[in-house]
Image (cartoon, rainbow, N blue to C red; front, side, top):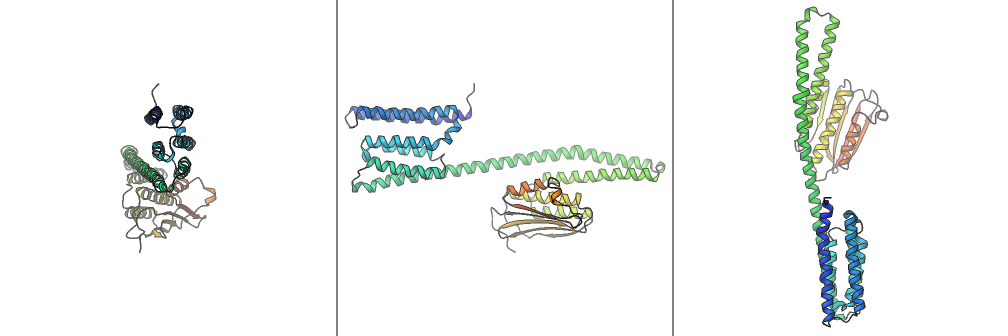
Length: 387
């Protein structure tokens, strides 16, 4: 059976643990044999047994399920701290070189522990080391606190470096995902263009050609029915082209220009008066913010085109207020009862997108009174635009 990546990673970490235990045991035995340690053989055997138990427990848990190790970090660290504290006290207290094992333990654990867990562990280490070194002459207190503070700062540095590296890897994964999504959208758009779009154009041209050839032989009813089918196909072709444009819209596109162009196209098709307000300069947005806001506005405009009927006016506004980016899309068309269409009109999709930015979506509508969609989200990067 092939070894999983989790087990391989655990093995790379577990091997040095056993090497540290072995080196420490060998040092203690040699120190005892040369008469440099005053502890008895019973105490030596107890410390060795506890060290082997600790390493064995880590190995057993890790081999069973490496992911469990991260959930048991604090209990295992507490046991090891108690063991090291006993070893320091038995081998000379403050003058014992065994205190360096605090470094070996905490430096390795500080990378995977939570910030709260690390602070708690450092506090326990200071208390344990203080007990192991007691009674401590006053001239040694400066050195004692230097060791404690140095150990704490090194562990904190490693903890912060690891967190920064983890955040970097997360951002890199998000960028990779965005790139893959962009590639997939381009592929879908190409398939729409080369497949469905091509067939719709062919069907429209074929029906128009048939209409011209049979023009003299068609009565008014049949002529109107054929023209109605041609108009339906033209509408489908227009929506397909709009979908292709939306799919190909880049996250880094000029959101202001793109929104204005889309709004003008929708207003022209509806025969409505467009009222578009957007600042000349928007704040610097993350790719995710640009993508989500663009998609929300597109979805809202698509709903206007499909469900508003024949509105006389269409309002599209973007603004920055109080550190929030707001987009408002409104019409004076048919409207609807929001309580009866909670699952329709792409409302869930718009809510999911704005919630991904930590924002909120508000929809106001009533039958025959038009619809207003307000999307707002905090600006996470860049300076707010000021008029």
